[in-house]
Each structure stands twice: as C-alpha cells, then as structure tokens.
Amino acid sequence: MKLLTHNILTSHVKGVTKGYPLLIKATEVRVNEVEFNPQFVSRMIPKLEWSALVQAAEGDLPSSLIQDYENNEEFLRKVHRVLLEVEVIEGCLQCPESGREFPISRGVPNMLLNEDDS
Amino acid sequence: MEEAASQLEREHVHSVYEKIAPFFNDTRYKAWPKVRQFLLDQEPGSIVADVGCGNGKYLHINENIFKLGCDVCRPLVDSAWSQGHEVQLCDGLRLPYRDGCFDAVLSIAVIHHMSTKERRIRAIKEMTRTLRVGGRIMIYVWAMEQKRRKFEKQDIFVPWNPNPPSSLALHGPARGPQRGGRSQNEGEAADSSDKHRKVRSTSSMVDDGDLATSQQKSQRLWFFSRSLDSVLDFGSLSVSRSSSREISTLCTPSDETNGPKVGWRCPRGKGLIRQMSSLFSSSRTSMEEDVFETDLQEQVKNEEIINSTEGNEAVSVGLLQDCTSVPLPDLVSYEMEQSNEMRQKENNGEKQEDDTPKQQESTASLQGCEGENEWSREKLKDSCMRYYHVFREGELTQLIENHVEELHVLHTCLDHANWCVIAEKVQVWRI
Image (cartoon, rainbow over all chains, first blue to last red; front, side, top):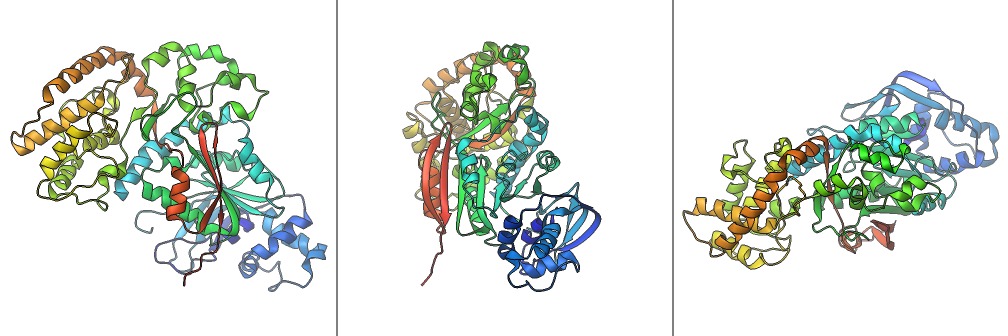
C-alpha cells in the first residue's frame, strides 16, 4: 500500500463518523524507485488531504504546503517519495474512532467488513 | 433478502472467481478499446478507481494518472498487486474511500453479478459517492440482447468449466483452459492481430457454443434463475402471511416437501441453487411488477395468475436443470405443476383445470432429461456456476436516472455483448 492510496482510504465501519485518516501500523515497509514526474506530483497535491499525508510521512514533510510548490523541484521530489515510493507491505490500518484494524498483507489492505461492523 | 442476496453472490460469484482466478492470467488480453480510451482521456494527475478490477487488466493503462483497483477476490487482487498495481480487497457495496476523491471510476462487468436490483443501485451509489463533482463513471454490464443469442431470462447461472474437453485443442495451443467470465464477453474486437481469439465469438454463450460440438450439444450453456427481487421483494406487494410461511418453510434444511425435480439428481443439486430454486418454484409466480390485491384471496389469486400467465414468458423459471441434448423443456409448465402440487398439499385439494395437459408435457421432459443424466452430471460437477443479471436495453440507464440523482447519463451504447454507460456526477441542490 502506497501512501497516496492511504490518503484516499477511510474506515467505513458502521456508525463511525471520523474514520479518516486511518492510523498506519506497519511491520514491513519498502522503498521502491519510481520515476519522478513533477507534473503528476504537482497535480496530485491539491487532491490530497495534506495533514493526513504529513501524519503518514512522519516528519518528512512540512506541516503546511509551501507556496509555489509547483515550481519547487526539491519539494516535489520529497512529496513524490512519500506518495509513490514508500510502500507498506505488512501491517495494519486502524480506524481512529472504532479501533477496528484492517490488515495489510502482501502489500494489499483488506478493507472487507464483517457482518457485524458493516 | 439481504442475506439471501449476499449468500447467492458468495456462492455463485465470489467463490467461483476464487476458483477460476488462476486461469484468468492465462487468458488475459488487452482492454476493451472504449475503456482504454476512457482512461487515456483522463487528464494527467487524475485519480481513477477500477471497482471490481479483477486481476488489474485496466490498471496499466495511462501512466500519467494514478489508478487504484479493488475487488472481493483475494487471488485476483494478489495477482494484480504482483503486477505492480495499487489494489485493495473490499466490497463494492461499502467502498473504503473518502467522498469525492476520484476523478473517474470504472465498473467493468461487475454489477451484473449483483443479485438484486437494490444492491445494483447501492453499488452505483457508492461509486458515485467516491466520485468528485464533474467526474465520470463508466459502467459495463452484460447485455441480454446479444448478437448471436438472446438470453431468455435476465437472471441466470452461467457455468464455467475449468476442465474443458480435449477437443478444445482444435482452437489452438495458446488457448489453455476455457476462459473465465470477464473474458467471455471481451472477445473479438479487442485485438485483431490475435488469430486465436478470432475463432471465438464475443457472446459468452456462443463462446461455449463454438467449442467442441459434443460439449455444445450436451451442456446447457446457462440456467434459468429467478430474480431474487421477484420472490423476496416484500416491499412492493402485499405478500400474504401464508406465502411468507411457505418461504420460511422452504428455507429450512428439511425440504422434503419439494419432492424430486429435474436436475436434482446431479451432485450440484445441493446447496444454494437448489434452495433458491425450490423457493422460487413454490412461491407465487410473478414478474417484478406483479401486485397482489389482498391477503384473503391470496391462494386463489396465485392460481389464477398462474393460469393466466402460463401462455407467455411471464413466469420465470427457478429450476436448475441438468442439461442435455434435449432442448430445455417447457419448464414453465413443469414449474406450475409443482406449484400447483404444493398448493394442493397446503390447501387440501383445490383443483387446477390445466393440470392434466401440463403434466403430460412435463413428464415427457422429465424422461428426456433423465436419459442424458449421466454425462451431463459429470460436466456439471466440473463447472462453477456464476450468477448474472443480464441487462435489457435501457435498463441500466433507467436505473441511474431513476435512482441515482447525482449521476447524469452522458452516453449509452451497446459494445459487443455489453451495455456501456458513461455518466457524470453533478451537484444536486435541495431546496
């Protein structure tokens, strides 16, 4: 699971109103090399929940978006790395409200709900 | 209803795809051109979801957009991940994505696996929720009206044979095992350079039909089912207490009252299909539009309706039948005989005038089927039955227009064996 995906995922447990963002508990993380496309990254940024990304990035990103980021290659590269290169292979995602855990195994988050929590 | 629907899908969609997942990769090929184009048309930096992505066949298209896929089938999702795609395991009715996060959504050959109208609507609504305003969704579903063959019913079970007869080798070594569901409706158009594929046709049914003739003649290519909606839709009609009782009786494990039926001799007679079918055959017959007037005369009303609709296709047939070289007999009449029998048992001897001629007919068909039993049972044992609700012309569009107000249909077409709809999410203002 890449952190860009994490930014989109939310807990959909029944009754939960604040299921976003999910807490990441990773036991295995991988960093891949992914081709850098500045236009792609800069177009992606406005679609993200920035604070959730900062939280997931654990210190690698500034807490607020810098001005004129579209032209700041260094910044874009940092964002690129966080969004697309860091990957959680094993671990789980935890609903911030219910505590329900969604396992991540072999890189794939299992967001299936049981009868009782949907 | 919900439980019956999800159980049906679990048995005849999810678990089947799990079994046939290994074969998908053998026969994967390029995307439908229209779907491909839809993806290529997305602006760079778009985020696109493929809901029901299978093994991720669309996820590699257009490297300037971010795609993620999801599916309920673990082996297929794992396979997609191993190709380098971002995928999740989830249910189309409860998507784990925040509102309005996608620029586009794909639903290719997915919602036709949902067993009730309500679930199909819910699936579309869920996808719409995750779409941003101005974003577009593309939906593909199997069409009832196909070029070479017309399904006679909308709710069907389609067998998938993982062990095709050796005569399939005729069609070329690259074939491998018989194609699975998705591939069945994505045949010829996609790749003209692929000669093997040209041998096959697009329609799922005719795919099987083009194969070894013995298989074609001996194996029924699909089976009637009855829409769960018509049987269990308690909301739209005044279902009598007695028919509810009937249904609950049938749902219990002991269904001796149903008696022997065509097709139950095969080992697959057990399980949900049988239960569902027995349910269908003894409850009231109807289309979804049937309305019963009152409680009081319910039993009599049922019989009247049976008699009046016998002549046409109005009665959906719920029996799963052993397929044979004998063409599918008039199961309408057989079913009515069964329902009549049932009613007679419960009502102590109310008579049906048309019993005799129908009985003769159905007896003959019974005998015909019995004769072929051995061979077809073998075949059936090997096949996984997938549930499909095939769509009539305009049905999908209507579904969206009537039930999903946030979607505005932009484009509809028949793409080979599929109805394709593209719709845009609009802002809905409530005053």
